[in-house]
Amino acid sequence: MQRHYVKVKYKNGDKRLRNLNWYNDNVIPKIEQYIRDDSYKKMLDLGAGNGRFCKLFHNWYENIICLDAIDELDDRYKYCNITHIKKHLHEFETTELFDIVISIASFKVMYEYYEDKFFEFIHKILRKNGRLMLEFHLSYDRTFKDSKALAWFNNGKISNVKGFEIISIAETICLKTPRACGFNLLIQNIVIVLEKIEVGEK
Ligand SMILES: C[S@@+](CC[C@H](N)C(=O)[O-])C[C@H]1O[C@@H](n2cnc3c(N)ncnc32)[C@H](O)[C@@H]1O
Image (cartoon, rainbow, N blue to C red; front, side, top):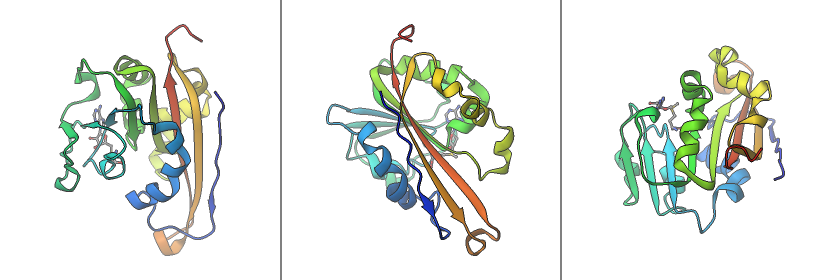
C-alpha cells in the first residue's frame, strides 16, 4: 500500500479549528477514499464523546456504535442507525466485527493508558482488512509534549504496529493567529488510516 502525505498551510487563522465543519472541510476529504466504500457497513466510533461525528458519517454506514466511557450521545446525533454504549474500550465485548473503527481526538488519551494493547483491542474487533482511523494533534495541546502517543508517532513505531499496515497519513498545518487565540500557534493535525492484516503477515 502507498502512503500519502498531504500538507495544507493556512495563511490566516481559522477560528473553526476542531469544529465539525472544520473537520468536514479540511480533514475528511483527504481520507474519504480510505474509509468510505459501499461494502463498509459497520463503524465503531471509539471515544465518541457526544457523537458529533455521526452527523458526518451516519449516511455512509448502515450501523454505527458510539462507545464512550463518560459522555452521553447528544439528542442531535441520535440517528436511527446509531447505538450508544457507555463503556471503556477494555470493557467492550462484541461478537460483531467492524469494517471501520475511528478514534478522533481520543487516541491520545487511550494510548496513554493502553499503549500497544490499544491496537490489540482494535485488532480483535475489526474484520480482516478492516480499517482504523486515528486523528490527533501533534502540537497545540501543551501537555502533548510528554505524551506517549506523540512518542509513538515521532519514534517511528507507527510503521511497525503489530497486525496493521499503514494506508494513509494526512497532515494539516494551520496557523492560529492572535486574533483567534491571543498568540501565534502552529497547529499540526494528523490523520492516520491503518488496515488490519493477520498477525505475522509482516
Ligand atoms: C477529546 S474527547 C473526543 C470526543 C469525540 N471523538 C470528538 O471528537 O468530539 C475524548 C473522549 O474519549 C473518551 N474516552 C477516553 N478514554 C476512553 C476509554 N478508555 N474508553 C472509552 N472512551 C474513552 C472520553 O470519555 C472522551 O469523551
